[in-house]
Length: 504
Ligand SMILES: Cc1ncc(COP(=O)(O)O)c(C=O)c1O
Image (cartoon, rainbow, N blue to C red; front, top):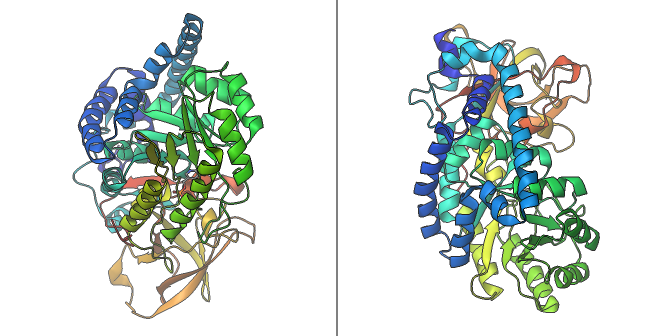
């Protein structure tokens, strides 16, 4: 293996490192997590809402889902859990072995461990110049993820759950953990299994309001998950049945919000109306150990006041329902910077949420949570694509809407910052003139089009590379292999993000 491979580390080698560490069970990874856990968590809980219940719950969370499972119920349940765990470990070993066939040489020669990122990371320009990649290159900035997580966890006035759907790249997950993230909002069994495998000490919350009975059952009995969101009486009954009337449930009623001004609207699909919420809260209260209300203002929300409006709706529901509420979960929606979409400082969002929460006048011990995705990971990643052809101001690039660039396509028309990267600066005439460009992706489909505009020097040409920034949220999660494309390399880099989000 070349030095380059060692330095830039592709995705597979990291994945296998995690698998390897997981396989060893109570190994380095766990020890590191334990240490990080103790250090960071202490800090987090001193700063964040030093609420007794919170601490108690966090300790329970930190003491591993397994422990919750052990104390959760009868011997029968424990037996089931043990069997399930054993099966899972067996499965894991099989997967590891398969992966190892191809990747062992890379693991053996990879000096980097998961406890930290290498200190000698390179710039994107150097990586491009050295590798001259023919396939898209996903660049991760470890320091940026760690500090974003750290800032969120220390500044948000409550508990921070990472919305796993946003990006489940194993390296990103690990850096979030190093930044102090210990709680995960998962939407499916797939996400739950993934997070559990990486972080057996983390605490998972199943926050999709619509679930299959089987996924609730597995979440509760196999993974020790206690918190579930719901937006209907049918879902409440499903949870009761699937958990065999669990006596330790956290039930979070997802409240419907009117269409807001967030760039990516999430109203309409999930959420109970005011009347329905009141009814569900009353029926859930006698069953729930912890009763919560959650909402989502929409992703890339640019106005802190949107959260205050949401709290006003929650306030109305609580006063009409007249039941004790233990937790308010303000969801995600926290913005990052994109061209034409520069948000106010993150602190203003936190302030608005704190004001809204305080105005509820909930009983002593009530908790505040949030579920950020985008704001934690957006700036941490870039995608580098190669120009395959140019026709006027349209560039044909080696990635597109069926690959890593779904959000830039016709569905969302999301705008991203771009930067020209030339491996051989000397061979080109520099020009300061910039123009708006559109992109076509590599597939046969003419829908594979990105309107941008992407602002680039006018002399951009075939074989140039383009860094597309603010790329950590969602994009790579949608990647397909349509038309045989989709293969992507991954490198760790030390550049600053292409845009700075106020408050970071
Ligand atoms: C329930 C829930 N929580 C959190 C998030 C994360 O949202 P964001 O990335 O806007 O912070 C989402 C995103 O769709 C969501 O559906």
